Length: 384
Ligand code: TTP
Ligand code: MG
Image (tube, rainbow, N blue to C red; front, side):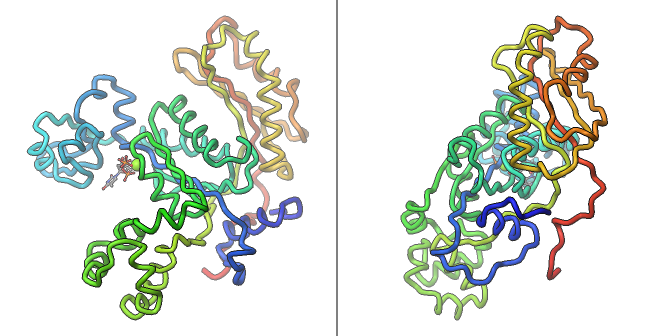
């Protein structure tokens, strides 16, 4: 990885994100303020099912839990109103909600939707850390798009996922991972909640201790027995008492209760491609219209390339098109000599891909794939 073009804070985060090593004791004053977004899809498996079968949209729906011994993997919010929850036996779910409709899980479709969501996130930044199929952290501290506003970025991501994947995500914006994750849950479903650095103290003051990562029923009960219900109470208790009662975890609890969490967003994947795509509010009528928007797409791609990987050698160019009937086609060609792609590089691919010139187009995208023969440089963990 080449670090020479990066600002100090970008270097700091790249290093933290890539090699999982803490830089010695940066004090809060010298520590660059971060902007973290956490996104989590709403009732993910159920949302994909409702997207693909409109008859499931207005009924209480569970995925899994059919038959005698199955458990519910998740359910839509209509079913949650009856008390149905993830990991509940199907029999109990049906007792709570007699009208419950169940469908068997179809992991292939959930994985495909997840890949689409993650690809949209990675268009915003390379610093994406997926936690599961349906949630991820993004470190957007150094992103200048959307006026550098993480709130606007989160809005943009939510809108794109809604339009292009057909499901909703909730997002949280905060100065660190722990708060961003709590924030994404705060306005679920289909919500956005922002905790600015100035709001952190007030937010944690009344935050129930159960919301802290690692505080399960046992720890919560122990804290309650000490009269500690909120993070504010925990701060008053003091770090020494917490360490005395909870050992090493006590220090971590104290830090979280004060709204501090320095864990970096850890990237576990090297970008293999960069692309941009647009879904049009109204379908483009034909190929000529596609050619009209091509220059703007290529300009966007170059902007993104400058930010994300200009130093990596390009191996292939590709064009993606989705027609109004949702059929989607991609064409890629090896073009190793291209340093900075221009419209004329993409025109032949478009000509080859679009043989029927009068079909309405819903989405158009252009991208590059990088050569993959470099030594893997970014993911070494020094002390594993
Ligand atoms: P979650 O994000 O925990 O739940 P969710 O997306 O269904 O609902 P929410 O709106 O509250 O975020 O989990 C993501 C997916 O993981 C979920 O759709 C199904 C699967 N899952 C299981 O298979 N078993 C489980 O116990 C849980 C919690 C989730
Ligand atoms: Mg979810």
